[in-house]
Image 1 (tube, rainbow, N blue to C red):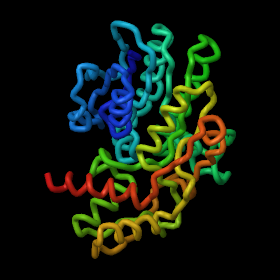
Image 2 (cartoon, one colour):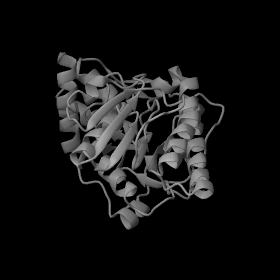
Image 3 (cartoon, helix red, strand yellow):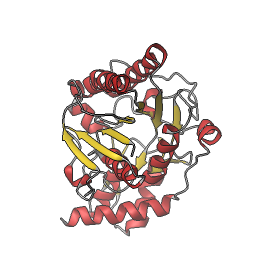
Image 4 (cartoon, one colour):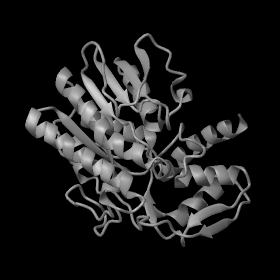
Length: 311
């Protein structure tokens, strides 16, 4: 039975990974300090092969026994989180990644880093291929997340080249689905909460900035294929269907049947104007592309948000 560690395993993506790997027959260790994760996300994972360890990976990680895989997903990921927790975000990207890589080296485990489309910053190339080096403001408020992930990629490749650790890097584009926090702060959770509670849907700027939204099950499948591939260079995983934030707001008003209006608020500093993954490498090397339509994914997410807002 393969033994797999998921750091940040009680978070939105981490909990889906824990569930997926349990279903694949792995023994799964979920490690989280619950700073943005929640035990509610893993409450349904009742199995003798599932273990929860409360720990901050920015401190030394000590785990007994063998490990086959380490998936490093520990980090605040929403702008409201990393703007409120800038030091913790930088530390988990630097110290946390260093500790997780040290563990992978000691256990001879395959290591997968959760990186992000934010390494491209406010991109000057569209869509964004993995070869693009990005346009990031290192001292802006969003720089704590962007640069933490850029450093994490650099140290991951250093461990691969210097210590021959089998490493993978997934650059995750906007993902949505059940287990996102109601107060997550990103576009889809914000719009769903506002629409379901009768409040105005707040759009930053004119809403002409674009995003590409991938349903969580598609992302998890792509990550699994990357983990089991021979690819060590970064690979984009996301949905290339690009749409404006205003279009997404209108889509959610339609899906919820809400009578809410759209309100405009000032654009945050360094907010990317465009975001669309080039998934040529994922198609070529992983035989992967998204399969869940936006309508189908939104219905599943809407059902979860309705349940959360009732409790």
